[in-house]
Length: 70
Length: 375
Image (cartoon, rainbow over all chains, first blue to last red; front, side):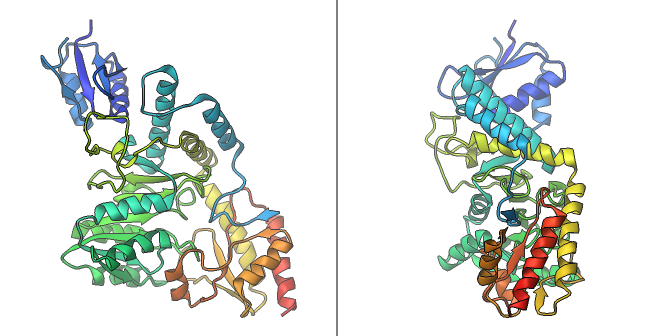
């Protein structure tokens, strides 16, 4: 069911991203990154507009592999 | 003891602040590090404090940096913004927390420094800053209110001046935050303040709040709980300026302090404290030997600085302490402001809090009058 995993630059931005997306009806959660210290967010949606929302709120992120698609 | 040294640190603290500290010590570990349950709930709590404080000052949560006092915040801001050199302007009323890092940078040849005179006239003060602006002026450091007299500087007008000239405004809000409604929308680029004064947090707390428009290169590097594979310091706020484990108990105390202020209302707090100042002034003014450092053309936060004749301020404060009153005398770590006032041996500073009582102010005035009789 997970559709995207975005790597976040810090806990603060991960938390902000989760709050911003949850407030707009997107299901997502923060997880601890397996490689090295850091936090990712799991986004349970196919809708690419989630990234437009992150950009609108100036929340930096990066997508690994296949555009972050899992 | 009756405490009137709230410009240094507010005392006592609200019950909610004490509870928040106890709860933090009992329940929290490290923030932003690790994924186990205690780390997770600590990180969530710290983020919630960031959000609450950001909302209070009209900022974004990621631009709220937790520091250990206002001096720490001012050093991060001044040394960070000026790290590549340039010209800096400070006001003639700056506390040593701003003046010393500025002078240190100037003495080591890293920057050029000017001090703009502050007057009891808004236009003259703004013009004084404007006259010092040069092509390479990078920043103005300006206290919002003097920690000696409480004089409020025209910081909104100075912010507008900075905006017109593309200059960073670093504001010292130590005596203003929690007393007057300071917001980043006033035009402040970087607001530095203490958590343990008007915000009612515990000692060892401070804030640097940025509008996000200017990079603030860190002067301290270390562990941030993020990008650990890189040996370079992260560039994004707040972690770039928060190396090392943050003081969770202090942060939670600031959050509780801000909630306490919001519940009471900042205007109500100001009104109560200023009324107490007015009572003291009216009472002390009856004796012409008492000099009060206020001017009718200026506005003030609730602080009253005074002297009794030529008696050294420390002697007056010591005698008041023997009578049960805690007031700060001397130079208040603000040599520039005292030089401007012409008070070489300092002043006695009265600074009430929301918990101060009218009867205690009247008792203080009586104690001061008793000292006058012994002149």
